[in-house]
Length: 339
Ligand code: TXA
Ligand code: MG
Image (tube, rainbow, N blue to C red; front, side, top):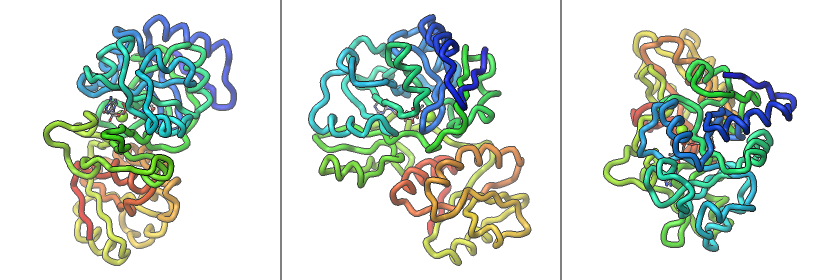
């Protein structure tokens, strides 16, 4: 396994080595603007199998396929309809659009569904890797199944040490939360996973938008997106998510829930309210971008404290806050108090 440092500059020869290795059926960890991905040749069933093994991922949870441009898209999926085309116009960027797949994409990529998630990242390292490789790259987030997604190499190195051929270090990812996943159902874009591209932005472009019923509750029975069923973004330590739009109520509720050795993850503004506890700030409550950038790495860090409990302050479920809360409610395994 080799770690390549592309933080300041892409090394052309090393990029070629990565592409050769992908063509030989090996795995490469690479940065995107959302989170790191663990990638394989999306047309090679055996290579894709290795991703599921490396992550310990359930085989009924499909992978996203990453493209560099729209040039050969219709080799892999059937032509998009007008609404799907509008969604594709958000690319390159943090959105995944579910389209009907062609047979060249093996069934283990799509977990036997007839559709596949298509995403064109804007990160220049990811774009160049896919372009030079010449075929789409299947890649889920780079983390062991169930853990918070990897947003920098230091956090995930031990999880994948020796399991992949190359790790490309592009520094911390910009957004920090995974892409918005959207599927057009009965002519309406349905958000299966919220992200940086918000419902309002989608509504503006497409005229309509719906949120999946499962964004804030455990999935039971058949779901539109298999990923919703699984424990996700969760540290080892038990966590509770607490939200109130009244800060005094929030502080009171947090105090009520403190037990033994409790750590708190919350906004910078509330840090001095908990002077006798270990308090980890995710940034200012007015800066959702900063919170999304920090949250996964912070969860991993606080998990190392071996606390009895982590209490996490929630944010308003609006704009990027919708995506932050969708992840945190799973971090807390639906252990959520709104007051
Ligand atoms: O930002 C991202 O999307 C990152 C970077 C690496 O691109 N990738 C990522 O992949 O988050 P992953 O595998 O961790 O999450 C993919 C989500 C899962 O919840 C999966 O169930 C859903 O997308 N998904 C994939 N293909 C699908 C399909 N055909 N139909 C419905 N949901 C699908
Ligand atoms: Mg994931």
